[in-house]
Amino acid sequence: MSDPVIQEIKSRLDIVPFVQGYVKLQRAGVNWKGLCPFHSEKTPSFIVSPSRQTWHCFGCSKGGDVFKFLMEVENLEFRDALKALAERAGVELRREDPRVRTERERMYAIMETAAKFFEAEIKKTPAVIDYLTRRGVKLETIEEFRIGYAQDSWDGLSNFLRERGFSAAEFVASGLGIKSDKRADSYYDRFRNRIIFPIADASGKVIGFSGRIFERGSAPAGTEPKYVNSPQTLIYDKSRSLYAFDKAKDAIRKNNRCVVVEGQMDVVLSHQAGIKEAVAVSGTALTAKHLEQIHRLTDTLIASFDADEAGETATRRSLDLAAEHDFNRKVAIIPKGKDPADAVLENPETWKEAVEKSVALMDFYFTRALKKFSLKTAESKKDFSRYLLPEIAKIGNQIEQAHWVSKMSELLGVKEEAVWAELARYRRAVDQPVAFSVESHGPEKQKAQKLEERILAAYLLYPEARELYRGHDRSLLFAVSPHGEIFEILEREKPTEGIPGFLERVPEEWRGYLDRLIFEVEALFQNVPDAEAEIAACIREVERERLKERLIMLAESISQAEKAEDPGRLQELLKDFKAATELLGRI
Image (cartoon, rainbow, N blue to C red; front, side):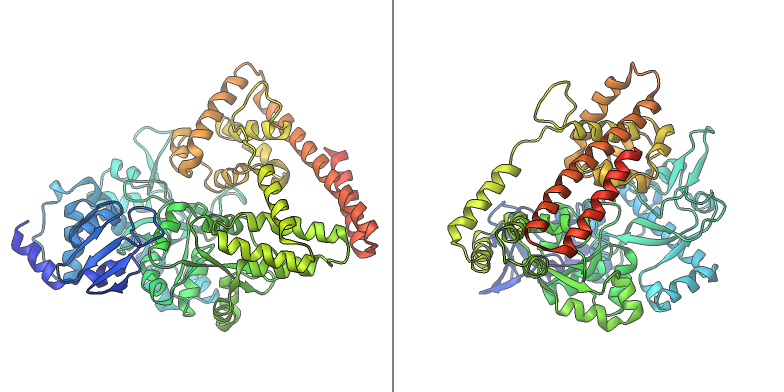
């Protein structure tokens, strides 16, 4: 591309507002300053010069013009950045021969073509439109978010893409299609009978899809997962991609907050209700890469909690990770049993008010703790501290941590030194190294943890035995982190592409552990005559171990309730103890 075209694009784009779409900037004299998006830092060293139309980071030494910035922040080749900036600047580029397009360009092209196909299909299906409108989604919102529909067909999209010049290899590489294991040279659509939510990158280009089951269709009841998501591809990395981030980024920067919700419907209805800084993850928990992306624009993260519950495990885990990245963590408290989409459907003002009145996470925990524990006895004070110390320990900022230690000291009526000592004791306990590999010996590894590892690896190694996992309490089967979350992904996505393909789709920090675990369990099972019987035995045994642990904790709580003379609590605990005992007897 000729230099005059590049200069024309630069003359039409101001680098400051463009960079502000990715980084929260503040004026610093004649320049603008912010936290560098390319390395982790707490003191801003990223400078943008409006006079020179350049940027430079004094921390990592990266720098350049608007082209270089877009290439770095979106991981684009120059040609992709050129097209994106030309479109934004209103500069027309000469049409290129499709035969010389890069693989990445072809990938973007097939995803955009698929998005248009799904958009057209939803217009042919009034029942889907009716369902969405009954859920509170307006027609203009359906169009704005490009919500589509995949018919209950094995090859609808496949045929459509083939007619438009896309190959079978591109169909599979994009994640839109799957190669059949039963018939040679046969492929089928990944998304079937699903409401489709396109996932875009920060510049608005479609990179993946999330499909929610609409009806059972021809599939037997219970055999289809509720959600199917695009796998990892050349352009889609779910550990980096946030649903609706392209639509939310300006509001995030303007309002200095990001509202993280669980599902696409929560995002869509939040935006419709005026909470345009809402985003969601797809097919994974919130990752460090997601948080780094958000932190470029704001230091405040808001999550939704049920009014009467401590929140979903995934939400708590996300907020714990946010503490490590020095976010101001807040919770928007909504009525019992509701998610943001339900709240908006009932009354949009309910959700808006919850976000506007969001409270600091630790204030929320302290309020809950004061409702749970009377602080009238030594035992209740001990329970109060046990409830809160793990949360205080997660806070990375020492000044903030000291604030909450001081508050706990005041509420308990003890010296701060005592609280600090308990906090240190808790840290020593949880910081003990945990081996995440199967070993023949090793007293540090609990029996139940070894069994969990066998069960988890066996799920991948023996697909024919997956029915054995149905109907079991997951809190009993998978109590060791991150086993439960890995199993949730397995159950949701039901991997058919084999172990290597699945490992590419789990968070990076788990891959090495899972790889070793699968290798070791495979070796362990190689001389087992009946793998299914062995798996079933492992499941029964780990459930027994977990129930024994639960009974020990219940017995301790019963003793505390008796000492505190709390008949209501005692009755509840005795009921739980009886139920756990009966369950243990049946296993």
